[in-house]
Picture 1 (cartoon, rainbow, N blue to C red):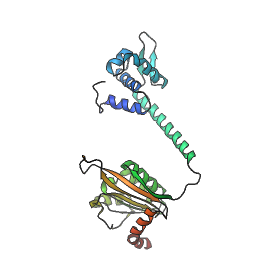
Picture 2: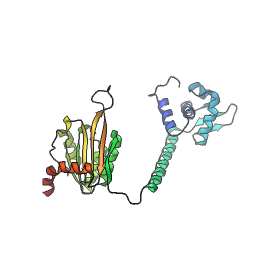
Picture 3: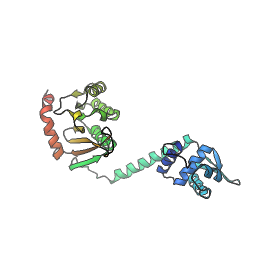
Picture 4: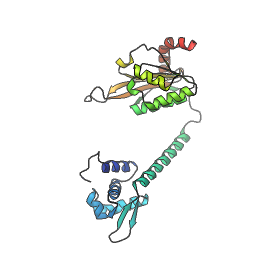
Amino acid sequence: MSQNTGDEPESRAATQLEAFGLSAYAARTFVALVSLGDGTAQDVSDVSEVPRTRVYDAAAELRDRGLVDVQHSSPRRFVAISAETAGRRFKQDYVHRANELTDALDSLEPKTLSSEQRGVWTVTGRETITERLLSFIEEATDEIVYMTVEALLCETLTDALRAASDRGVMIRVAGMSPAATAEIRQSIPNAEPFDSLWDWSDMPAGRLSMIDQEKTLASVLVAEDGTEPPGHRDETAIWGTGETNSLVMVLKAIFTWQLDGNRDE
């Protein structure tokens, strides 16, 4: 497999196996055996970057993980479990580890969580920001104000907003293109668009949200590096929680005159 590039299935499979905790030699040995069906140490070495003498240690590691069976012939032969079985086994292991981690972290959290995080916090990366925003949306009980550029309007967030609307939370949206606004209105019929002070699409802004007037998040789009085209952007955000949090107070003041009339209605 010495000629493989990172995009080839052998290389991708080995990379994922290493991510699940296998050594590099064990990952390459397993990939080789899957492609061969079964084989000797020499067979594995011939199609992989694993020295023949190291195949035995790699096979022992795989056997201990239940991924390879050994035939005690001369020479010894090895056979890998099926790709479907391996995938199911690793998935079960991943879920188990994730549950163990969640249980352990839950036991470390304070028994009584503060309703306010003092100061303004920074988070970077689109997926991480989306996760933070999703947690805010899922905790909403009264009102969600959400402004975003169309590129950041993903199905996951739309589903979360719709679920919030279904449980009685008022959804107010602005700053999107007409097409994105129409998409929101179609998915969330009760969502109320409002006019923004800014033309959001003409700014490097990403998204701006206020949840229950006590949780806020504001993000901007930034170039990943100086060599990337302007269209390739990353995202960074600041957030704060609590009625007396400085970011919450500023954004609440900005939105008040725009939204109070609608709330009074």
